[in-house]
Length: 304
Image 1 (cartoon, rainbow, N blue to C red):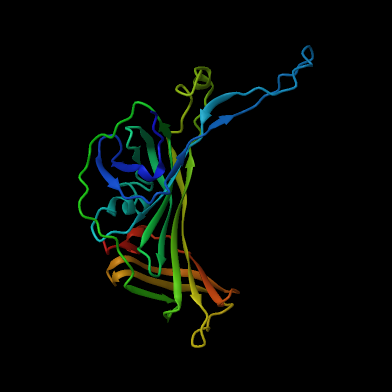
Image 2: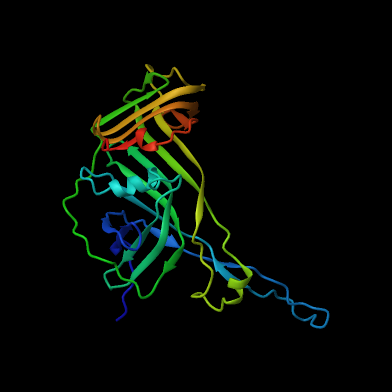
């Protein structure tokens, strides 16, 4: 009897450096998604002598970058450090990001591989009464669906999710009170894949295996921004419907001031807007304006 590939049974492995590096197990929530599509450039078949050919024909030569998304919990142990570093840090001696491979394995033995992956977006999720989480989105060069195996089987040690027992937020020198209920910080890495379609390569394409896949990319820019959602109370509404530039944003979330997510960001702009709901809320939306050489000095996980 054939078995289905169920997403809730997926085991996700990350290999860094790609092709010859260390393999780690990722405790992804059961919402991982990944896919890759091909570019179909249709062309007309109708000619002066063949007026009856009304339908366009397909011309498939190359694949679009693969994409993937998953969410992992923040951990008391250092098992998440690799993912965090791949999001935040540059490759040694460069101004670009490190690449890695992803493997998705199922109980029936089926394994998929995403080659040459880059993280394009990471969102630090901070919600009261929830564990700290990191949502990852990225792109890869090629999705391989057959003849794949995980290079090695790593050992999964004890892992303890980090809950929020300490939450500190200050924006423009004002400490926000306990009516804050949701915080998110997002780092976007704007990736541009190098054009990879050539006449010579296109002539050799006959099927999906010989299609042209992306291989090189450049990092165009980085955007660090976030939001803070807070209920409006009688003792705190001083910034409602305001904006300000050149401010600092300080966020600490975890089990202590140095255990969890920590952000010390200068030169930011924020806007504050009213959100009308059953209980009125205010939303701080902020964005970093500076260009630090090392984001790891202002974004820290477990104070690493």
